Length: 211
Image 1: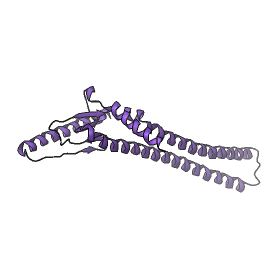
Image 2 (image 1 turned 60 degrees about the horizontal axis):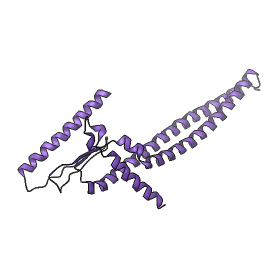
Image 3 (image 1 turned 60 degrees about the vertical axis):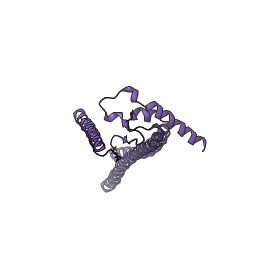
């Protein structure tokens, strides 16, 4: 798995290098023509933009994992998800406890020959089996629901950061802002994670103060 990830990263970096070569070739052949090249890697949340106001290129990268940990919106959304998860688990645990009690009562009746007939014993056994299957289906349903909610949370966070970076970069003027997860090496001086986190949290706090 690590080899596959390394290969994908190498392919991504190679693709970026090719874009640079193509850009400079086009610019040298057409000095009066502005060429804009934008590429978005949705799998790694890499945001690429060209600064048309400068002939120089400015690079930066963000540690997305660190950003999401420090971003206060993450804590808010995770808190909501955890609350819902606990509610669903409580509901499932209650139904499971009820089923276990019914199963224990059934077993006790079998051991003490309390059923009036074999037919009534089989009928209750079938009823317990159907309840067990419904309980298992409910468990899978709730598990899938939590997974879906978690995916929505991650997408909401990603959209929040992506939309913010578009506004942030109007003043910052970076040509490329990378996700460090897609790079093999980067000079720490180009890390703008803390700066982005600080401004994101300022916006978050300002937004909450208006509620």
